[in-house]
Image (cartoon, rainbow, N blue to C red; front, side):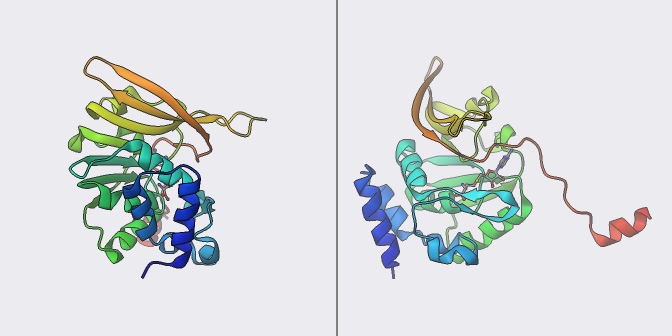
Length: 226
Ligand code: SAH
């Protein structure tokens, strides 16, 4: 049964201008309480970002809804997501398209997200531990790309993984001292002949970090080195 708090949240999203019924339905049916840390369970349906493991955040529901709506996904589309995090954005997208390919650089976050996808039987999401700067060339080109961490500049090699006519929604900008909001959510459309960019709204995302984090060594590897 749908959590009454999810219905309240969706009513608030409608008031804020989210009009796409498919997006609103997907938001209503995605149990955000499963994607937040237990300690934040009581805030799961508030319209705010919350901390998750590895110093990252689960995005604010309004921003997830706004990005999903801006992405204009169709049910036959293949979508690349950079920054799996909790897996919430992927779970909202899953019922709206054919397949989601999602990349995360932190193994513990990816493992937890995979367990959530399994529990919710979202079997059209495939995951990869990797560096989102590189995208997923083996599966390219994509109809849509959604990035949920901020790039200082979007790599051309990632735009090249969009099909002609494809859309990318991506926060762009750097944290500058003294400025509270320095990122713009940007819509990049790949046309037959080039690229069109459109600034949407100011946002605040965690930054994209290149490469993979150093993982703690396993005990037996440590012993061998001594
Ligand atoms: N979509 C997520 C939001 C997660 S926050 C959700 O719905 O919960 C952004 C995520 O991007 C973080 O988990 C962070 O680890 C990840 N990230 C940052 N740089 C990355 C990179 N180079 N490659 C892959 N993931 C990256």
